[in-house]
Image (cartoon, rainbow, N blue to C red; front, side):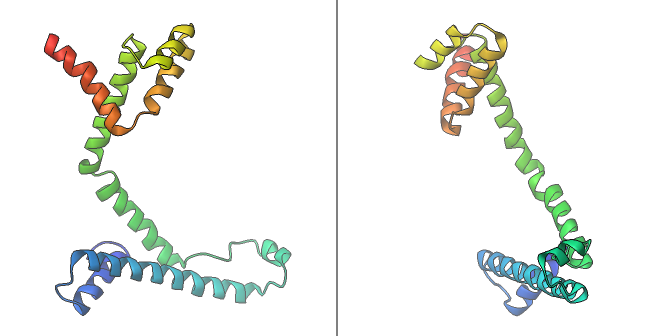
Length: 167
């Protein structure tokens, strides 16, 4: 329950519905998190608008501050939640290892095609017609960028598994 903003909501849901299915718990926590964010921004913004009492758009611009925002406490919680998510989810080893593998695969395909491996018809023609190195790199990068994940994996296997078998 030590997750900023979310922890107390998880605790509320688990207390109210002991043994709730994980997918339903996630949905309920997400719903409550969205509701809390909306209620916070509305309450904080209403206070700001009341304090400034703008009558026109010019009054809003002249206020010298943002009138629609989270409370400082909620904003701090949101910032802490984002930091938590980046550290524990988005940049976790479980996420980053497949990302690194994909980056290696793309780099190896790029190097192989720039180094002379055959690309399909029009791509090979475009590569042959292009004489400068930057242009050649652009042709190869456009080809690789257009690949679906399964096609890239298939091409990588065809290029590199064959080389490994040959020796």
